[in-house]
Length: 159
Image 1 (spheres, rainbow, N blue to C red):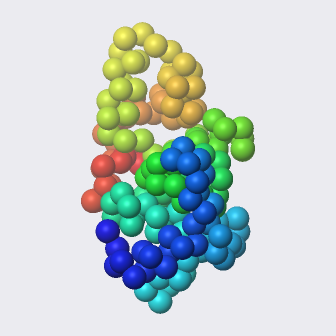
Image 2 (cartoon, rainbow, N blue to C red):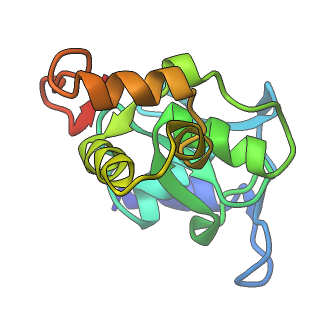
Image 3 (tube, one colour):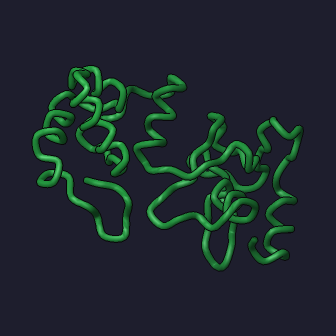
């Protein structure tokens, strides 16, 4: 929970509706996203809402919208994830083309699952579609699991 004075000031700028509805930010908007002045810094409104109600945002993650409303601050519409997760969300909602498979980060568990699927006879092209990646990337993961995809310091992802 953040400092209550800032929290009160923040929530006065949110048009709270029903529990399942988008709660629109009514303050400053730039680039389509709500902006809020906090601790001498301009922050994204949906990030402040997540941090205030749910939990501190983990390092290297962003706050995504379950809805496609950039000004929504309803905590039940917000979740953390990677940039790739956010691109996949937008792709699934039809808001953009498929993310480039060459820049996707995989979680360690995903790498294990990819290898397991391949060992069970699933073609690399099918696995690539499942993970919004390329068959070439999947083949490299399978062929060189410890060479091309190394653990990142302080992160549970592989590159």
